[in-house]
Every structure is written in structure tokens, then in C-alpha cells.
Length: 232
Ligand code: MN
Image (cartoon, rainbow, N blue to C red):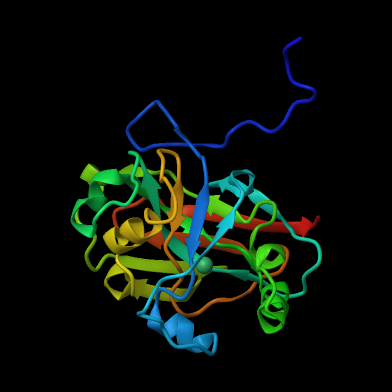
């Protein structure tokens, strides 16, 4: 007999600017401490020895315009505005000079974080999953193809919360560049079309409560709007 024992959620599909086809999400990689000012506000220095990562399940994706529930188990629920890279070609052990060939496009993203649980885990040397890899923790906006975005330079990245600017930086402040991240990650994974890389957040992270409206913007990309709903 064939067939499924039960149904599971469908693969999340992200809209693409100017295309009817959507981008199916395979995996979500997230980079830690990739802006010096954010590393400092979290009590750390940037490590130029090696980047580090955590992951979220693809099922954590939520789309532009969504209202997401205030998650359970936290009293310190934080936003982290991020530049997201969408992978469109396989990459394994790829050199930095060839890494951009694996990029499909870019999007605005939010790495929503249960900061209290992340910090408890960090202090105890435990994994970050409870703090990072939970339901509705990976909002993403419409993907813009790389050719339409152009070179990654000093585009502004900012987050507004209830109309006030809370995070503001430029992509020139990324400690690890996009090709460096792709090359490094490809030394540990067979990167595949459908993978996303959330490239880290600038300084200014903070807590939100039910009713907050987040609007993330990066020059050249579609904005990302999310509302925080009541507790789950
Ligand atoms: Mn982050």
C-alpha cells in the first residue's frame, strides 16, 4: 500500500516580484552576530574567525501582511530585521568567487526570537531551538530576483515598530558578506534551491507585545509588514 499516514503542512511558497511562480522553501539558515553593533549590544564581540549559524524549520515561514500570535513560553519576544538570501542553485564546497552564482534573489525577513529562552540556553550551554526555532518565527517578504536588485552595497536596512524607527543600518555593515556566508555554509551542507539564509540583524533589537505593527524595509526590496496578535 502506498500513501501518507496523515497530512503534514505543505511546503511554504514565497511570492517572487515579477513572476507567477513562487519560491518553495527547503531550509532556513540564520547567521549569528553579523553586525558589530548588534554583537556589542548583546554583550559580545564579532568573531572574524568563523561565522556561526542556527536553523529554523521551513514551517516557521509567515508571509507579508500576516498577524502572528504572541508565542507561548516567553515574556521577552524580540524582533530582528534581516536581509534574506534565497538560494537558487546547488552549492557544495563552492569558493567565494563563485558563490554569488548560487543566489536566486533577496527579501526582507524577521528572525523573531524568544530572547529570554535564547539567553537562558546560552548561559547553560544548551541549544537555541526554544529561543529561535518556533512556529511563525520566520516572516519573509516578497523575493526580488538578484538581477533586479543589483549588487549588494550600502542599501539601507531598517525596521519600524508602530511607526518609530528601531533598527537602521546598511548592508555594507555585514561582517560576513553574502558570498563569504554561502561559501562557508557550503563547506558543511549541500546547499540547494529553496534554502534561505537570514544574514543577521543590525543593532536596535527589542521586545514587542500584542498589537505591535512591524514594518521592515531594505532599499530595492518589497517591504515586510507583520502585526503581533494576541497570545497563542
Ligand atoms: Mn537573527
